Image (tube, rainbow, N blue to C red; front, side, top):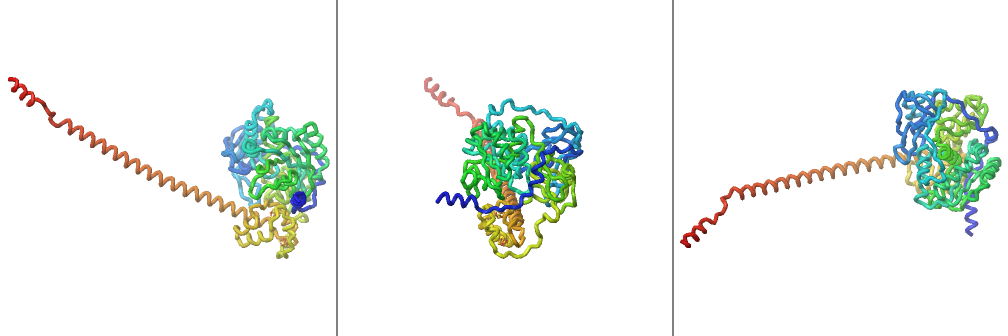
Amino acid sequence: MFKKFANWAKSRGGVHPIGHKEKSAESAIRPASLPDMLYIPLRQHAGASAIPIVNIGDKVAKGQLIAVAPTEVSAPVHASSSGTVKEITDIVAPHPSGHTAPAIVIKTDGEDRWFDAGKIEDPFKTPPLELADKVAQAGIVGMGGAIFPAAVKLKQGAKHEIKTVLVNGSECEPYLTCDDRLMREKAEHIITGARLVRYILQAYRVVIAIEDNKPEAIKAIQAAAAPFGSIEVHIVPAKYPMGSAKQLIQWVTGREVPAGARSTSVGTLVHNVGTIFAIYEALMLGRPLISRVVTVAGAAINDPGNVEARIGTPISHIIDECGGYSKPPEQIIMGGPMMGMPVISDNAPMIKGATGILAFSEEEMPSKNQSPCIRCTSCVKACPMGLLPLEMASRVNAEDFDSADDYGLKDCILCGACAYVCPSHIPLVQYFQFAKGKQAIAKDAKKKMEYTVNLSVAKQNRIEEEKAAKAAEKAAKKAARQKASQARKAKSKPAPTSAPESTKEESNEQ
Ligand code: SF4
Ligand code: SF4
């Protein structure tokens, strides 16, 4: 009975989009040339923006800290090459809105000279929390696109019992092959990174999950993992969204992360292979996160491939590294086609979470001919979270977000599988993105309102306390004055004398 349920849960939802991976997967990672200018955004991570600590005109070296994280849920930012700080200003953000975002602009000097931050002598003999702090200082975030600060997850080992470190090498989105190439070319480094993460979390085992459409990567990782008994390689079926943390945990461990809960509730933590590689570089080589491997693909690209580019490199420069455009792109996407975001200009820079830069031709774009829902339930069958996308979308359409929540909006992982299968071309995932955005704004406004109310209550309490303190001080002074006056009066009264008595006595004696 249980086995039956587990199999059903394992196969729930998901889609099989055409991979489009062949072209980029077969070419080795190429290092991108150094651009003249680097545009390094202050916010490339979940949490608060980093705060600049350099000024215009400052000379900086590659890997030097240029902006600090104001809170634990944030990440510092480092110079991706040596040069001079030209500006600290708003630039075109890698975002569909076309809004600007603050960034540090560096004019590179061509020397690409490293900042010497030193390195740890033996990470495996260093206390785990110290290593987690080093990962935080290196500015490492989830490189699979989640952009959550990696150190926050690493510190969970001190709070929860983590049995399994799950290294996500599934790379289930079409077109993307950067993790595939990384596993083929840097397998030993990834294994060392995975061992370090296991040590930091004090976990029992590491499982590296790779989709069955990456035989070369599987071979390379299996060979590198062979000497270590605590590392297993799991081959998972190629299916979208296998790379979503909840789906992967369920497939590998057979345990379902309950709605609203975190993966730690089932003793598992998931890190993308790119994140594991960045952790290796930070702890073994003393290098912060200043570059990443990104897939450049799409029919509008001349020579698709995987490029190792510095953070802050303009998208246009990276595309030039792949032969430039073969035709004017209909749309440019940063990330994968299912969960990535369109960018309105190729002047925008590449950021830490960018898994792909995709330039699509008109033929690759989803149909815009939307028609009414025919209640075919294809979206329900495709949803890996077991939700009712059609019902959620109609509630969102009516701006009834509470009701959409009742249908599971909170559990929606925005994977886009429902929209992919919809024969009516209803952009379902855009509805859910819109609703979640609205909810986040409302939550933020509520928080600000509560903060303002708390401030005003605190101010009122302070005024009352000050009033009471002043009244008490006044009363104390009055009491002191009265006491002093009584003392003075008592002093000024003629002192009672015993003379008449003694006179009497004396006269008696006489
Ligand atoms: S897949 Fe599209 S048409 Fe079919 S039920 Fe869902 S929303 Fe309606
Ligand atoms: S986007 Fe949300 S509703 Fe649609 S398939 Fe993914 S999890 Fe389900």
